[in-house]
Length: 630
Image (cartoon, rainbow, N blue to C red; front, side):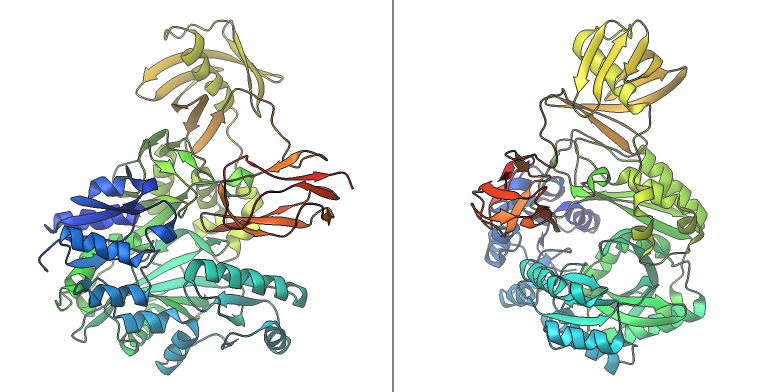
């Protein structure tokens, strides 16, 4: 191993995870943080930490000079980029090397080659890896129309640089091409600083399967099987597993050999992932991620390998310790991503303070988290809060363990995808392993669960206990109008909400929980106060109870301001004061946590108030634009 501290050039759960391995190996670590992350868990996970700038990533985590300055100030001798931010930036890799530091990753030339989807595709073809028909060379709208006329719909327009679903739009008709191309270019420019695109056939139905590779600088290269990543929403992965339920030994060998051939052709070093599209027994090259993947834990669990340790050893110049013939897979692992987003509101990003956090534990359970109680979740960064991983002797056991772990996870203060993911895991096709990349979107509406009926009366009991009664469980007279939930009354051994009444008894447990007995059934609930709001949760569900105030309608009447449905940044402003608009016209576009949202006119009228410009930050429920009478 190299001497000197390791600078971790990232944040969140991956920075905590890298620090954990480094500590086990006796390597001191340096964290970097923006103003928004001063008290973040990844800062405390390291031996030293350096502020690198304000909250916006472009002024901190994407600032190469600030990162190199942090290394100089702390004596760091090597840099691990994690994933996201500059992890696939050849410029950053070169700058690290030019500064005399060791880069934990592949050579800059390899990152550049694989980061350009057109060149990467050509490299894959030359290495004998099957590729999808497409048009490269940054086609314009007319060239895309010509391609679709020849090859048919659907097609996918995607950024030449980067990945992770950013700068990617599926088009199913000629009428969609112009808007999709504009959106893909805009998103690609914002995410990667490069608005070039290519177009390919969009194969359906298919699976998204990826192969983990490891290579050293001495010619050694192996693969560690495949991961199934087909459960996606908006091209963002939600659940991943290893191995894929669709891949047998013969296909696994062919895919692994193809991935190794591409890695060798690209001059790869370290840990990387070759992403493939799988249709029956045929697979096609999609892209190569030249970094650690978010879903790497499932591979670690089934092979018993610490991929971060292997990255560090390769960067230190050591040959691979692993041999292909010696690798043995054990059991099955499934990972669920926990996002700060609200499925009930169309998966809008959810910000705020984590008022309560408690991670599950038990046999076969692993949690990689970048938050804790008190963490501020902002719109500046990716909405991924944590990953819950379950390992078992077989797929059915791993799925059961994961469901129980998600039920035990407590996250209050921000809305999360936890209950939604539990509903997804219970889907019969998911349990049977009959997956494809369109499954989640097809089932989306049926997978957004309503909070269980008992959550509101239990929350009312908890709020009553906190507000007006000694903590002895006696139910007395009390009523409150909760925003969005109506009047809830607690009186004489009952809780009434709307027309329904429950026989009730409260049993305070302390330590952030309360036991409520409703109609003879007693359950424990997690509770947390956050300002004037009380959050209550059970088995992945969470409910926010806030004293009712006058709330504006989601779609304002004439003369009422439309409010921001999420905190974020203004990307585009399509109208100005005095403009006439029709119902459905796009007024402006917001971006938050890698998601774009168009704010549309709820009715025809005239723009009366609009003071925003691109780049402006907006808060949740901030007035955006007022549409008056026509």
